[in-house]
Amino acid sequence: MTSAILSRAVSALAAGTLLAAPVVATGGPTPFTLPERPVATVWAVGDGAIGTDAARAVAATIADGHPDAFLYLGDVYERGTRSDFRERYDPVYRDLKPVTLPTPGNHEWARHAVGYDRYWAARAGGRTPPYYATTLAGWTLLGLNSEAPHGAGSGQLAWLRRRVAAPGTCRLAFWHRPRYSAGLHGDQPDIGPLWDALRGRAALVLNGHDHAMQWMRRRSGITALVAGAGGRNHYPVDAADRRLVWGDDVHDGAVRLTLRPGRARFAFVAAGGRVLRSGSVACRPGG
Image (tube, rainbow, N blue to C red; front, side):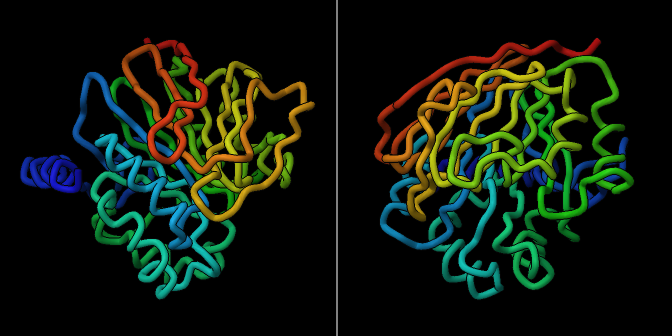
């Protein structure tokens, strides 16, 4: 499984398509690029950089799925230091590093200059950006940052609004803390500006933070999935929350997506490979 991932990455690097200049301005090249494919398999999970057997089992399940991209949804325990990345993140996820699109969690952002930024610098081709965009299988993937300034007047919000100004909804945004959640942490009102900027502009949002799996009912045209059951521990999900399509606070697992122009299929997959729940989302391609 490892050789397949590395082989694709090496081929892409040789073709000059894997890494690009670390620019986050609208219209410039993106820092985390991947070989374009008509159909792509993407996995996503957060809250798993702890080195437990459960975390390793989730990572092995993802690697067995031979992802074209892996979204790590944040949190490297306990403090996201350089040693935490070396001792807790890297042993679990190093085989996926060539195809990883990261976003920081609340545990590591305070020390991002010594941990997150340094770890991802080579993958980004230089300076690690706080937020970025790339494309895959007819979708724009927006790696946003719930821990950096994102409110009115912030550079991130201005960048996001410019980035989604074009018509269409085939956009998948991901960051750490969810705007809406039926889990222990619950809703995060401060994330409102990011969510509002995506209204009518994106079809999918993925988050971590709550250590569970959740499929939230579509709101403002957006389907939100929480994939924080990466192996740390489990947080309870309120099954009575009417905004919830489905939730699981028992299994460790991740989300698997199959992206193609105009549509995405997703499945919540437990460690070991059992599909717990699945669904699909349609999007409107840009003009």
